[in-house]
Amino acid sequence: MKTFSYFLFENFDADLESENPDNPRRIINTQADAILDRVAGFSPLDCSATRLRDEFGTEAVKRLVTAGVFREQDGKIAYDTPIFLAEDVSALKVFSSTAAVPLADRLWKLRDKLWDAVGGINNGFSPQVNLYHILCGMVFDGFFFDYLGKRGVVATSRPHESGLDYLSVIYEDCPELTQFSNGLLCSYNRLTDGKIALESFGDANGDRLDLYRCFRLREDGRMPERFKQAGKLLDKLPKGKERDLLLAGARSLLQGSECSEECRAILELFGYAKDGELCVPIFDQTDEPIITDLAELIEKSIYDEVACILQKMQMNLDITATRHGVPASEIANELYHILFGGINEELVKRGLTAAPPHKPGEGRYLKCIEWF
Image (tube, rainbow, N blue to C red; front, side):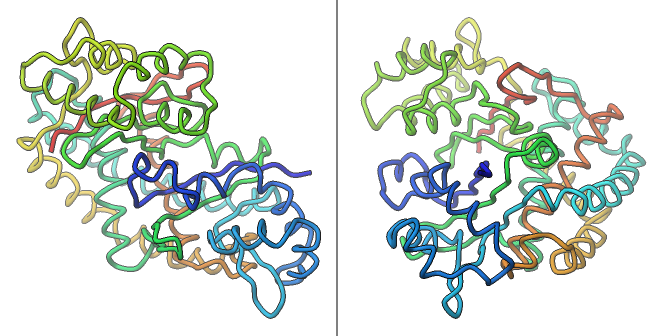
């Protein structure tokens, strides 16, 4: 039986909705593997909805339809979210290899302008480290993503009947697809209240020792051994207020004040602080003009080509999702992640930005703090 990896882009407060039965993390997970595998054995819109319900239960199928994993059409079931199977590897390789390198070439020619721009940020870290966080993360997975979304090139939102807004992406577990599902530098983890964010940016090849991942693992009840100490420390904080207290503690340190011993211990355990002081790159309101200017420079340089590539590929790429009629803009969302992840890999390889270290069991990533 095929097994799958599940990725969610949540436009809702994951902490506030952690106990919601309609939280997609309670639906779009490994419990759905068998049903996804069964549908994979049929041609698009050739899987009988009745037979699928008879085999797996009406409620199980209904929840996956309601969550947008499947859609029912004329009594048949088809995928309705971007899903990538082993048979899609060749097409994805061609797309990634032909699209990412020329765009990286163009940005490499701007290297002096990019380094000069981030040189104006005085947070104690090198231009390459700051450019990693700003270009690879904030611009590609923030500003640029928003540009594409506002112009309708990629979907950034999908409201569901539950009232929750999220997008999902599913990959079959196989070595050939891992380079796209887990191996590219295109994944943000952010613990935020909208005013301050404890972040990490990198690949998805493991469970990062960061606070966002810790909260999600704690929510799922599956804390790996290296997170056990963190769980004990979080248990000392008032239940339901852990996130707000930690963010308030980080804000206190930013302002030169002290925070509680419990919060300090957690921030130090996760590598955001050391000896009572924050020790990662900090980006605040004074840096916003630099970040905005850099984002506009990137947009002028490569936006038209990126948009053209995605619009061409989202319907014409011969992959499972297009054959099943998955919304084109949602396919484009994941193709964009593959594209900018490939660009980031090239830029890191060439030394334009810092290279995030690989940590066994966690993947490659670097941490920073944004203070809005």
